[in-house]
Amino acid sequence: MPYLRIIKHDRMRNNKRHGKKGPNQIFHYTPVEDTTLLPFLYTILAPKSKSDIKSMLAHNHVAVNGQPLTQFDTPLTPRDKVSVNFTRPFAVLRASQLHIIYEDKYLVVVEKAAGLLTMGRDTNKKTAQSLLTDYLKQKDARSMAYVCHRLDQYTSGILVFAKDPDMQRELRYNWDNYVRERSYTAVVEGCPDIPQQEVRHNLVENSNNMMVYVARKPDEGRLAVTRYRVVQSNDYHALLDIQIFTGRKNQIRVQLAEIGYPVAGDRKYGGATNPIGRLMLHNHRLSLVHPMTRELMHFEAPIPAAFRKVTTKTIENDN
Image (cartoon, rainbow, N blue to C red; front, side, top):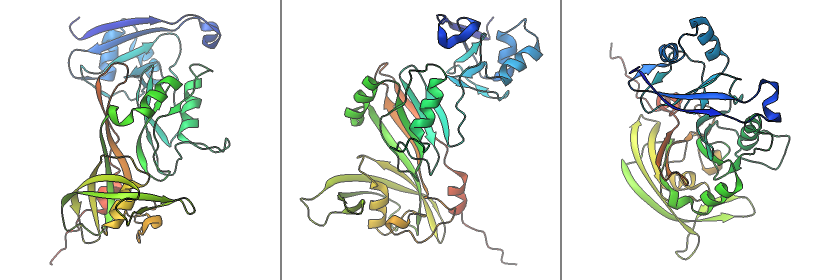
């Protein structure tokens, strides 16, 4: 059959967490040409009936690149891996504020919504870490999500978690060595006169009010390096593509405010407008070397549509 290639067959051992149904029987497939999910399932699962296949898809027995999907027209390429669990549904993350981008046996990469804490001490308050841990415990009651880095509560975008403490330590202590690119999108007030530049400041934190400031003395603070490019703008706001080369607390917010263009919605650092009711900062692209496979991996979280809408020029009608 030229349309597919079987990668491997997993048969998980029977144990208490799998209940009475016995071991998982999971087959993995990859297409050899571009297609969509449902026609591909019809091919690989023949001679099952189309109604049975649709039922398996609807009830989370199918995953693409490790993520359960129910969308029948999901596009597939030869780079994708389709997994089918013939025994039971795959575990599903049921949290509107968190979306899984990638998962393997070592890492989980998610997109966090604005307003959700990365982690917290209050066990009654949901965080990205607690929601992800609940999801992992569906597979193994001993599992836990381990924080590798953080995003501010009101910043949305990509977060990386480890599945064990050893992987967490490896990534946290060598983060700058593994990460190849960290890119954000921000909407700022006004439009920078210089459409593209690198800004460098030493930053210091005031432990009393938890604010970060640009140091006024050259021997104070820690260096923060940020590069921005104006993507589009109107009379009020500009959309910036931003790369950071250091990982200081509130780095982007403080540096953009320092040069006169605070992030929209950022009252803490001088923002005067709040066009969509949230901090307009989003971690949209992350590239890192996988600590185990040494593969360079690229992850993206789509730029919120409202960011572009707020910075689109309005066309005036002369009539």
